[in-house]
Amino acid sequence: MQLSRIVLYVIAVLMLAPAAAENLRADTGWQDQGDHEKKLKELKRDISKLKDWIHDAQGEQSDLEKDLRATEEKIQDKVREINKIQTSINDTEKQVDELEDKEKEHLASLSQQKGLLARQIQAAYGMGREQGVKLLLNAEDPTTLQRMLAYYDYLNLARGEHIEKYRQTIDELKQTRAEILKRNQALLESRNTLARSKETLESQRKEREATLTKLNSSLNYKQNELTRMQKNQKQLETLVKEVEKAISNLELTQDSVPFSKLRAKLPKPTKGALQQLHGQSGGGFRPSGVFFQTPLNTPVSAVHHGRVVFADWLRGFGLLMIIDHGDGYMSLYGYNQALLKDTGDWVRSGETVASAGSSGGQSETGLYFEIRHNGKPDDPLRWFKK
Image 1 (tube, rainbow, N blue to C red):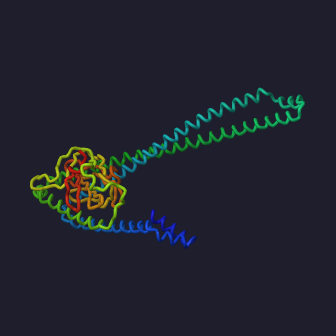
Image 2: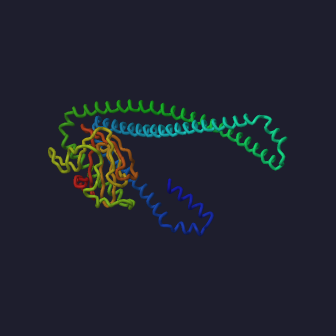
Image 3: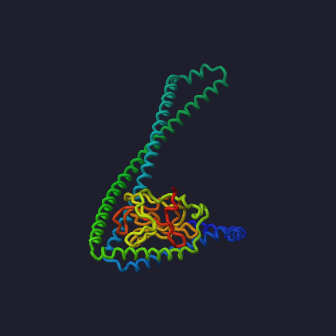
């Protein structure tokens, strides 16, 4: 969108001032923006190829595993829909509050204007209908007479203006009340939609639990658990390498502290107790990250400024997000209930990017988190604030 506006501006300048257009074409900032957009398109194209690779790599999944993935992706879509509806409700509630404040201002203004008009009418009534005739007959000085008649005109004009303003305020009050009614109706509809969406989400969660129960009851699934975990880890390693290739030409903005300077200074990506440590051996399997045990739907935040370079479902890690922080550093967020950012999105440090869950067939809810440098895992515990 930003690039389109720039292009339109360039065309306008070319038509109106060739010399100025020549200077604009020479502006390196514009050229950098064009290169940046081009690289972003290339990134999305490469990530799309990665998704095809993931689909092929996961072709050996059983029907139950495929059903689990499909259900978890539906849950993600529903969570994002609910978040959108809730945001709309919050915005509308804020608008209603502002309109009700405006209504109070109109009522206060009407009360003030009503009092002023009452005093003007009482004053006019006290002067009497013959006051102007008396003034005409008693006035000896024509100048004084002319001045007093002008005062009468001013008073009548002012009274007419106050009456008109009073009418305008009444009209504005009617419009405000109509808008409040309209917003409240929209709120009611949004809340009903939200309730239905939550019912659907609960149904989808039950469907997931049923599928997961069947999957865990499968003898073959249990027997091959270690092999499956090792395959999943290897697939993640391959994914990270492919992502690194895809982002090799994508530059990050230089508006934040380099990631390498943040050792022992990073915030944790979510609340919760650490249940699994980097490199800890478990039945012959060595995980590369940490696990935060936390309630379902707990916000997950980016640990640092960067760009989302992967956001999709990956076997064993569920809904996974990878954020590139530049200089070969990446952070990985897995097991999410929903990813709230898409590939190519910029994120700020501390910005909510996902909600914790148990996707990928996990039995506990929480967040799986890794930090990698040049593709190799780095102990996250050494990066978090003490």
